[in-house]
Length: 265
Image (cartoon, rainbow, N blue to C red):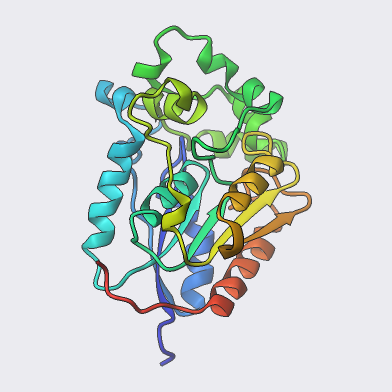
């Protein structure tokens, strides 16, 4: 039996659950990693069900608190892999010293990175137009999801993917999209506290975390960061055709930068 390389905690993003990691989980388990896929609070609800009202006021800081508690319960310090909002949450945890290797796939930007682009505004304008969205659960419409992150899938697969989407916290969305209005600075990350390897992956066709935003996130971490952009990939980089190329690159990068095996603080 081969020796385990390390433990990976995979953090999902907005409107999805931990099932989005099924392809990555299988691939990395075949490479002898232990893969853990926690589900953010209220993201395991049937997509057709009405969401709990308090989801609407759930903060990024509360998501991060839940994840920190989860990570600290582990025997070893894990590798953090986050996608979209999960990429921002991974950055928050990394700045708290909870990992020695971090992979950010199409990450939502922290407050110091300007993520405003026309494609982002167009993706979210339907939600922003609803008064009080910042305190309500929100589910993106099919039309907007198709534009924002499903556009690189075949038409039939777009409908199947959309059927799995759940409601998201309006407050968390506001904390990411309008950090200048957030008194708690929930999306703030102190990059000086991240001194270990960070891989940032962007997709050339990404509309909700454009490649230019992903590059700026990588630049935030300076010498410890590596940026890799994949041509022909959108935000749905975990499941669209060619996802294996991205996952293989991540695996090779992890192996090159080495497992830590450090004790969880």
